[in-house]
Amino acid sequence: MMKINGNVFVVTGAGNGIGRDVALELLSRGARVAGVDISAAALADTAALAGAGERFSVHDVDLTDRESVNALPGAVEAQHGRVDGLIHVAGVIQRFVPIRELSTGDIETVFDVNLWGTVNVNKAFLDPLLARPAAALVNVSSMGGLIPFPGQTAYSASKGAVKLWTEGLHAELAQSNVTVTVVFPGAIATDIARNSGAGETSAAGADSPIKMTSSTDAARQIVEAVAKGKVRVRIGNDAKLLDRLSRVMPTKAIELIAKKMASAAGAAAGQEAAPTK
Image (cartoon, rainbow, N blue to C red; front, side, top):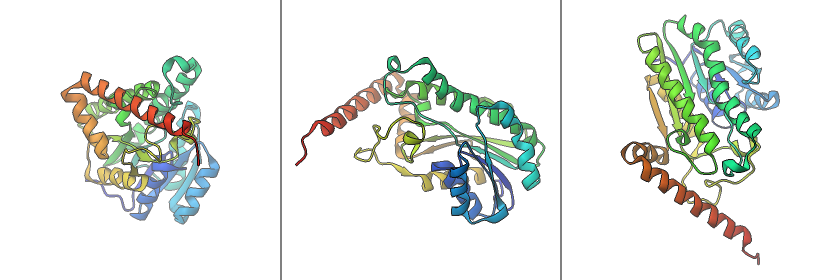
């Protein structure tokens, strides 16, 4: 169990989506939060929504810039005195196209943000977290890190790497004061596609039959996991189902997702082609 009230948490991706709602949830429970995002304007919006005064500090940092990330712990400690937890949410998806249609640069961008961003921020905060009597380190993977999604192969691979990286940290730190948690969100209602430059549509778009979890509910579950010291969190029935399928019948699960994605893409194409009245 970890106390939320009065403790200091660093939240990446705090400018929007799940990251913003995690920051707001922590603040509502009496925590102090250092919000990190690449967009200063988005962080300013989060600060305005929070209305938490000096309990919320803003740090506009590109997580792929290792030098800037390495300076973050000092900046946070200057504002709040210490760091008790890191909740790393920031990430991007790719355009919804097959790998052959992505440039190497597009793929590198996904890995730079999702994998190397994770490595950079985890490495930067490990020593400050280990210095605390009790601390938490949370990385957000994806249900795409459990099983590949056609049209999101680079994204799935990067999030699969985040899964194994985080599980490795859990093994290494199991006897320490730091609880390590990996989170697998399913379909969450956020603006990640637009913010990633991946367009506006996906297989879990507004007209999709997939039931999406709200980002506020996802954030609540993440903060609860920190409070309870959970090691593994699956958010949404879709993530829970795919987690089970990926372990029980991995090949059939891959084929099933491929068929579902193809069906969803076909339905979307049909809607776009249908004449309007």
